[in-house]
Length: 185
Image 1: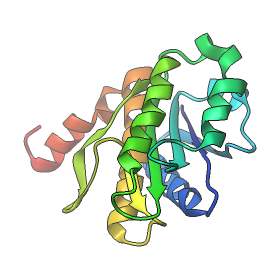
Image 2: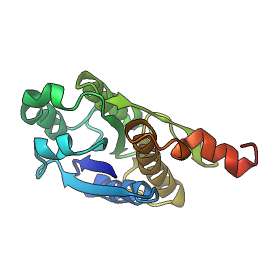
Image 3: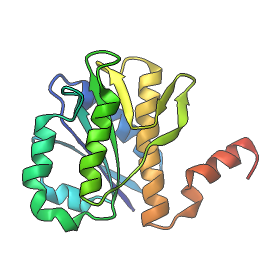
Image 4: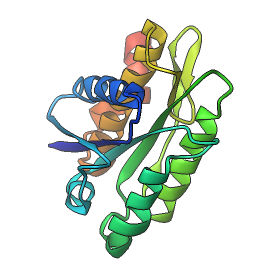
């Protein structure tokens, strides 16, 4: 059973809407249980419980929010070695395009790498004009289908990687599934 945690901070509600879409994507993969926690309600046990983690934060001056950083600095620090080797990804929203969302994702990924998480980006295009190389990013709230597709793809890819890397379900490997869709597998 895949255990996915979607952990987020959301002052305006925009990142919370993204989190719901990430959950939808993760639930596309069979045998996946998803927990959703606001950083205000999260506990270290939630992070220890999961196999895969999606972390979402508003973009604050090009980096993750202070509340999310505080969670990792204070609540999670005593559990440094309890999460090593889990799989994680990031998502973020800013006030406008060019607001630093990808930098915020990179700052989230940097924190997670310091805790030993295996982090990833998504090479596939979610839609013709949307990627999630550093994580899913949107300006303000996810309004368009492109925004929603990027968030869903991120959650799906997280559940796929957990299935493959943690539970040995090779049939969930994204490249193999893509080749099968294209008739090359």
